[in-house]
Image 1 (cartoon, rainbow, N blue to C red):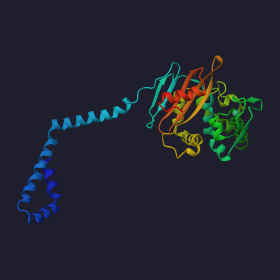
Image 2 (image 1 turned 135 degrees about the horizontal axis):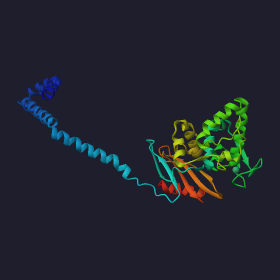
Image 3 (image 1 turned 180 degrees about the horizontal axis):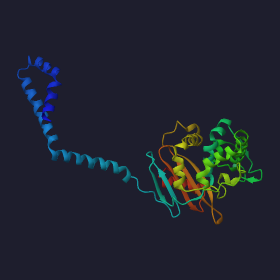
Image 4 (image 1 turned 45 degrees about the horizontal axis):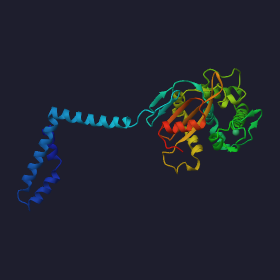
Length: 317
Ligand SMILES: [Zn+2]
């Protein structure tokens, strides 16, 4: 070790030695003193690294300090306080998923199904600039808003969760798939995207089913849990959906707002075995943190948004 230090000192300082000699012309004895000082410094550094105990102590101190800094951000974030019956799954930038409460319990997914449709048809619908005029009823179906949502585009239909707009656009898409790809390929594509939420409940048949309200989350055909839906959102296959969803939800503010801006989708699903009862879902992200919360029965969209903000410590709107 010492030899190495010494060879570095001499081999690497040829220029320095020349400089020292030049300076020495003016300052008598400077070189000796300076050289001695450098050597002493090198020796003392070298001996401290060679001393096994001091070496070990230095590394222990480093490990303790590093461990402290690694743990501090986690300790600063207390576990979210959930109410009985709530389930939360949350993931940070590292993709690490944390689950709380009833995060693993499956339930009808409600309007979260509209995000699955956005994954499947969002690019086509956006390029066609789809529009719909919701009057509250359409082809024998009623929108949850009996008054009707009036004229909606994709962003407004997603934000206000207009069932009839989605149903109309889905049926147009289905007709196009059958025409272009044929019923077999269309069914395969549908099963591929909706598989995680169908759990083997895909209606029997050769081609694609007749799309009714159960395909946009009305009823219990499509089901998920906070943990399962978060895992689906985090899957790299959903990157395009996450970008489109953000763009639709934040609109022109996208790119202007800070990276802290959250976008969310609410859903209200029925409660199996309890006719007329509903429970609310909220899925949201700010690009760094993504979370899915399900409320217990009896809670709706407004409760869902308030609880989501509360549980994640976001300012109330
Ligand atoms: Zn509507």
